[in-house]
Length: 239
Image (cartoon, rainbow, N blue to C red; front, side):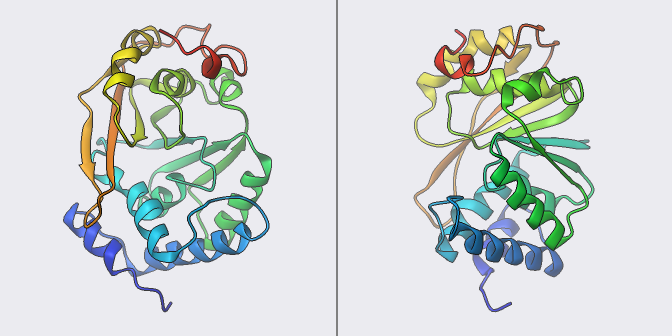
């Protein structure tokens, strides 16, 4: 392994988190597979190694700063090329992960990754968010649901909160100004059984990249009518 992971190691150390040499090797193999597959299918616009380290690996693992205690099951909804789910699964080998995506090509790629680097704590599911949220196999089954998907928080909450157990959490990775989005989403989150905590704002070290975590506690069961039929949560966000 000739690539330099010093930024990631230093950043994680600042967050009081460490990866073993074997875990770094798994991340490196994941990087190789991602770049190779990206030549034939559109997985990510970010391919430069240093950018992947900051914008994909460090960003995904920044969740270590807000990770709740006593988490046994995590769902990454709309995982795409595997972010944040694959780096998190490498970093937390004792937690069971379920990665869900609507595009089967991406799930097949992630199966290659899981098989190649030996991630026996990962299950991959090809499904739309609305389907997953209504499926009794997944509905209200996870301690934590995470998503880096680009959508407003009302829409994401309708996708993600149905998957969270009562007492669990939905954590949304966000960038940019989120104040207006938070204002507009309060009633929607409440309808879905959640309660929004104060957002956590931070910057990725040694960059001007600002990030935030929106942490939602699941206090009540999500009404059975949610999520609504495919396409509706994005076209008509709850208010």
